[in-house]
Amino acid sequence: MTAIYKFTNMKSCCRILNTLFLAPSLPKSSVVSPNPNYCSTFRLKAILGRTNSTWGQSRIFSSSCHFNFSTTARTHFLVARAAPDLRNFSASVESHANDKNFDRIYMQGGINVKPPPDEKIGADERVEVGENVRKSECSREAGKEESEMEKEAWKLLRNAVVTYCGSPVGTVAANDPNDKTPLNYDQVFIRDFVASAFAFLLKGEGEIVRNFVLHTLQLQSWEKTVDCYSPGQGLMPASFKVRSVALDDNKFEEVLDPDFGESAIGRVAPVDSGLWWIILLRAYGKLTGDYGLQERVDVQTGIKLILNLCLSDGFDMFPSLLVTDGSCMIDRRMGIHGHPLEIQSLFYSALRCAREMLALDEGSKNLVRAINNRLSALSFHIREYYWVDLKKINEIYRYKTEEYSTEATNKFNIYPDQIPHWLMDWIPETGGYLIGNLQPAHMDFRFFTLGNLWSIVSSLGTLRQNEAVLNLIDAKWDDLIGQMPLKICYPAVESEEWRIITGSDPKNTPWSYHNGGSWPTLLWQFTLACMKMRRMDLAKKALDIAEKRLSLDGWPEYYDTRSGKFIGKQARLYQTWSIAGYLTSKILMEKPDAAALLFWEEDYDILENCICALSNSNRKKCSRRLAKSQILV
Ligand code: GLC
Image (tube, rainbow, N blue to C red; front, side, top):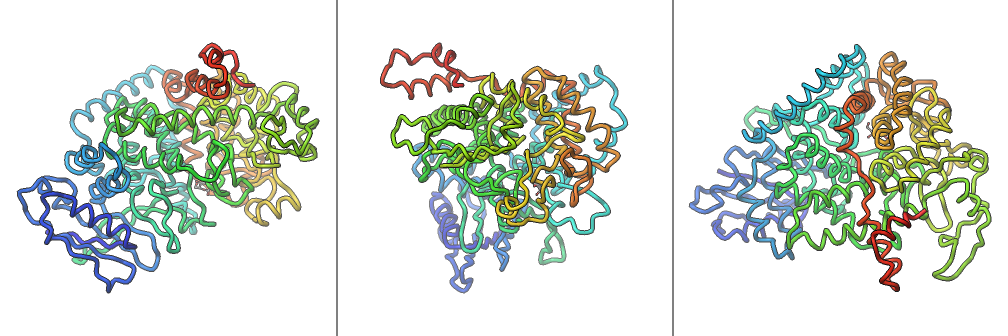
C-alpha cells in the first residue's frame, strides 16, 4: 500500500526521511526523495510493502491510513485521521535525538504504542472509566434533582459536542442557531473546552475528554508555518475544526484543521493552550482514575514538548514566562504583553501538574529538576513582586527611585506617580491581590480575575494572599461581581489610555468584552477557588446571581457596563463555556470531594528550594521549618 505525505518545508520532510532511514528494517528503496518540482512543498512517498520487519506490525502505517496533508497557499495543514501514528515518531526523532533513552522511547512510541485515540478505549480501561461513571452517577442520585436550568444547560452542552469519525472530541465555542457569521466560534477552542471537560468529567463522562486530549496531542507535533516561519515544536493550537475533505473516489473524509494563530484575529499565539492541556490531563486522571492515559509514551512526549518550549532559555531576567499580547483568554491587544498574571498562574499550575505526571527516569530527570527550580523561583517572584495591598501600595508610594545595586528595595524602578488614582481610593483595608503584569518601571495595577483565581487554586499565592484575594472580591463585590459574575478585569481602560492600549479597538471599548466586561464562564474558577478557601458563601452568592439571568438571556458570552447590566454588545449567545462553567460550578458545589482533587495545597518543598537558594551563604538556614516560617509576604 502507498501513503503520500506533503510537507511544507524541507525540515519536516527530512525529519520523516531520516526517521524512515533510521528504521533498521524498512527497505530503503521504498522511500522516494523530495521532488524539487514541488517548490517549497516536499512530498514523501513511502511504499509500504508487506515486510517481515517490525515495521510491518507497527501502527505507524496501518493499512487503513489515509494521509492527506494539504499545504496549499494557506499554509495551515490538515491532519487526517491516521496522523496520530505518524506523530509518534516524528515527535520522537527531534525531541529525543540527544536523549539516552531515545531508542527506548522511540521504539515504544513507534511500535509498541498503546492504542491511538481513534481506536476504541481498551476493554480494561473501559471498565475502569465506566466504574467511575457509575460511582459518579450514584453520588448524583444521592444528591438533589437537577433543576430545569441545569437540564437545559446539559441539553445545550450536548448539542455543542463535535464528533470526529464518530467519536466526541470537543465542543464548539458557541452554538447560536441564529448566528449567520460565527467566525471561528464554530471551532473547538482548547481553553473553552476545559470548562466543558470539567463538566463532563464531574458527571462521570470521560470519553470526550480522553479523545480531546489525544487528538489535540496529534495536532501539537505537526510542522506549522506562518508566513515562512515555524513556531516552536510543542505549541498547541488555539482551536481546531473538523472538516470534510473530498477523496479521489468521490468519498469524503473527516480531517482536523487546527489554528495555531495563523488565522486568528491579530495572529495571536495561544500560549495558554498547552498549559491548559497539561492541567486537563491531570484532572482527567484524578477524576476518572484512568492514569494510563498520562502514562502513555506519546502523552509523556507531549508534556515534555510543551515544557521544553516554556522552559527554553531566552534573554529574560525573570522566572515568569515572557509572552506577547493576547496570548491567553484575552486574545486581543489589551496591554498584557510581557509577564501577564494569567499566563504565570497557568504556567505554575501546569508545572505542578507535569511534575506529578512525568515518569521519573534517566530521560526526564533533567526536566524534572528544571521544573522544580522554576516552580521555586516563580512562586517567590510572584508572591514578592506582584502582590499589592494597602501596606504595599503605601510602600510603593514612598519608593526611592534610580537605585543601582543588587540590594535595591525598588528593584524594578517603579516611579510612585504610576500608582493610579483609582487604586488609592479603591484598595480596601483588608484584602489584596496580585497585579496584572510587571515590567521594568511598570506595574499594571489592574485586577485580572482569572490570574488571581488560578493563583488561589494552584497555591501560587501564599495562604494569606489567597484569603486576601477573596476578601477583596467580597469587599469590592459590586465592582467585581455586580449583576453578573465575573469581571474579566478591573477597571476598564478609558479615553486616551484606551486608544493607546487597545489600538482603538471598537470591541474592547470601556466596560465591554475584555476591557472590563463580565464573563460568566469565570464562575467555575471562582467556585473552585472559594471551595479551596472554604468560602462557599461567596460562591453560592455569585451562582445565585448568575442563575437569575443566564438562561433567560440565552447564555451570553459576556456582559457589558460597570455592573454587568447588559448583554455584551457583540456577545455570542449560547456560548458553550458560559453554559459549561455554570454546570461545572453547580456540580463542584455538590461534590466537594471531587473539587478537592482539582486544587493544590502549599508545597513546602518548593518553598524550601527557594529559601535555600536565597540564603545559600548560610546553609544552616536552609530548612523546611524556615520555609514555613518565611512564607514570603
Ligand atoms: C474570544 C475570547 C477567547 C475565547 C474565544 C472563543 O476570542 O477572547 O478567550 O477562547 O472567544 O470563545
